[in-house]
Length: 448
Image (cartoon, rainbow, N blue to C red):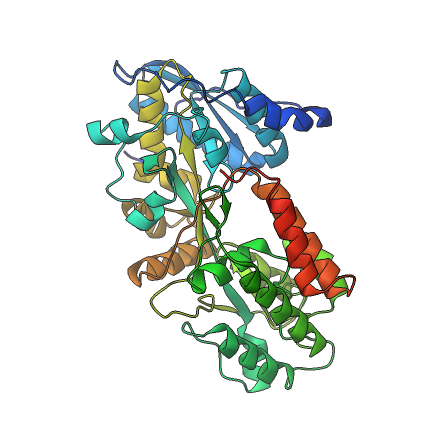
């Protein structure tokens, strides 16, 4: 399709108001009864009629989605797609309420951090038959990426955007310090040694690294790199000793003056441009790939050393990657009454090169390998986006990616994990006590 052709005008995106905060209280109860019946939506029939695509994001993302819809409606002239967008938190609240009532739109945005909640309760339609029939093509999505959309061996999400957390470092600072750059094959002991060597040669007021201790996603890499699992059979899949070692690892580095102060932890959770790495107060930290360019721009704007390099997350087993990928993608709810059109739109969004160029990898790095080529070959694609795709391609080619599944209750566990680390870091409890309290909390959370 010629991208210079005028787009057919899609239905304007609807922006819904925020739900009342009290709605969030009923989320667990609202979904508790959704798993009584197996999905029964029909996938056969012509492509046509009206569907709605619901997703989270900003106005610029909404504009890009509108372009994709326009391209789709040029191809499928009998179909009408209405899109609606909300900010992330409002989107999740609305998704849960609608799921409880069986009123979800025919295509919804999902993410590996929360979609299992809906898959396990039969809210989502398994897509395996649609893939087998060819209604949804997946041949150009790497298997490791595709697997992130599976629960219990069934495909519930078509991944369209990847986020992978790596070690990012200020290459200009490291070079000025006269310290060799980190490598892709470090153990955690190697990494600690490198950080200490770097700290000894950094200027006053700059620390070698941010504190990864309270970051549960960094801890996930630690667990997988040590040969254990985050979750297994509805329970925590790692032992207490491994978690205590993680807490102590970062507490010891902080005591040695290698990390930013513990009081700086809130700064790590705020706007990306204001984090220690992005303000030049730290030389290293973990970041999702698309965040490299944002960090670099923030440093450039402050006239500080700004070249951001990256390496794989340390692992204790050279054969086991600790680069845990997550996915944003598209799912079809079981209540959808127009599965054929929903599948057609999902297939277009995930595979069409023109759609990929229009969307510009806005919500994670594009997963489709052929569409990646189209994105990189288009003159309008920002260089940062091209760089992100190149990094992901290198990880995929090197088989340096791994996946994990996330259960219900992840958000409450993530909050508790950070809280307990900070309690230990500030000396309010020992690392062992913090771990015991975390495990006690986990025992009360639904981890299926």
